[in-house]
Amino acid sequence: MTRLKYDPWVLALHLVDASGTRRVAMSTQVLSEILGEVHRVDSMRTVHVRGIDSDPGEIACLVDHGRMIALAGFPKRVLFTTGEGMLRQEVEEVFRAFTSIEFSLPKSLRNELLPFQKSDSTHREEEIERWLNTIEYYARVKHTWQLAAELTVRIPPGNLAIDLSDRLDRLAWRMSFRVQRTGGASAFNLEQQQAEYGMKLCEEPYRVMTFSACGQMTACSGDQRQRVYFGSLEEDTLRGIWESNSMESWRRNRTDGQCQGCPGLGTTLRRPSLIGVYDSVGEQRFHEYPQQQLRKIAEQTEQQSASRNSSSDFFRAPRKAS
Image 1 (spheres, rainbow, N blue to C red):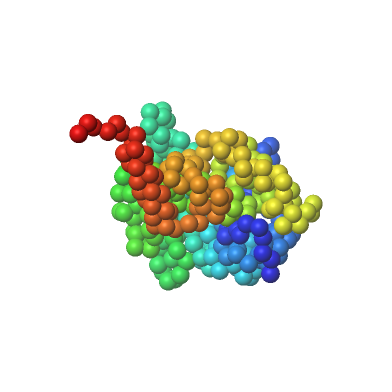
Image 2: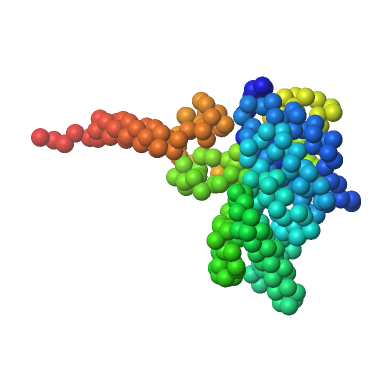
């Protein structure tokens, strides 16, 4: 088994990419090569299957790719889909290939539902109905066959979520799926980042190993601007790419570069009493500390600082005449 400098938890695979001039789907050969190398990494247990400007459900070999990932020995396999093309798949086999299927709104529909966005209401309603029908069908198959895979529907936050939640609640087989409100673009939940700490940036550079449809290791599994690429397994080893100078530079400078403006990026340190800890252990180790422990360190440091300040004020204060 392989131990890397940073222990990644997630392998993110973009099985299809339509962001360029042509649609690219990950080949079986490339997938096999990636799975063979990544499976040797001790910390890797989860695979996320995604697409760029297109949906994994659109590719005919989705179930075969899912089976390959399962046979490679990854216990958690999550399919992220907008539902586009998913009714053309063998639904029961999709459930067996993946341990979790997560539906989200198609990008075109999300844009149409934005406040003050002018759009054809009839067309928008048809799109919503099509999306809801796909979810309902997957829920029915899951319920009928008593399949163990989780089915989740992610909806945007805010007022938009209220209407969608109501409509999802009225679907048949509602008990077969759960609804969650989405946050930022990060693969990890940012809710734990309390404003008083502001301590934690997105963990993807340390926790997520992302490959594009053409087999290049890329910077992020979110949907942010033009992507940067660091090399393929044909050019270098997995360790060589993951720990390369170019990737280290991206990790250090992402707040001012590629990730600038990303809603899932997170925040840098704000609480002065924790700056010493942050500087001494570095970003990656700092955000691994339990929040309770950080709170305790911060409070102790601030109490000591307050005590020193009060002593200084006492000696600086002019003495009153007796």
